[in-house]
Length: 237
Ligand SMILES: [Zn+2]
Image 1 (cartoon, rainbow, N blue to C red):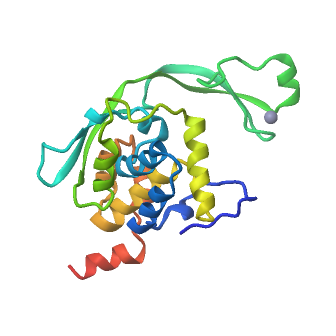
Image 2 (spheres, rainbow, N blue to C red; image 1 turned 90 degrees about the vertical axis):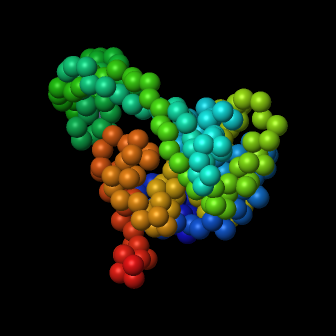
């Protein structure tokens, strides 16, 4: 388990994601959830490995328990942050001072004279992108220990699993982390799922890329490093 002091700036680095925390730890987290929605967030967040903004969009109908005798199939879960390159455009960045950027999706304006004065601005050619609607369909085994809890948590849900926003969900997860004397950002579930898939099922880069619908191998490569346990598994087969 990764322990980061509360005073430390929360950082998400490759070193912090190497190990799977274990199903027992996830079950403890679910039990520590203050509300039923938070419990759903823990369970669905891990099982789907979705980004928090994607997990919050989940509906009961996304979970198909009847299709496969051994698998829960998540069908057409929304994926955010998918962009298509549609051209090139001029952008600006502050090179040394603060790394701020202009002409981007988040900050579309170009630097004003005052900003040009204060920052070390350089101009560069970047991509112009367009948001894409995307969905992922993927399985997970019914025998995973969190599945019975998920089924219980879906009972009586009409449609949406959540009616909380990002800020609220972030706070709730941090609260659980505090009870466990650790720092758990919402992105943690996604990273943990990736580690678990690599360690317990021997998922390789290309499997992870497909399961998460990642755009490239780079992210998958970070998680697919299995540590000594994973390497040992391959030796005793
Ligand atoms: Zn600057």
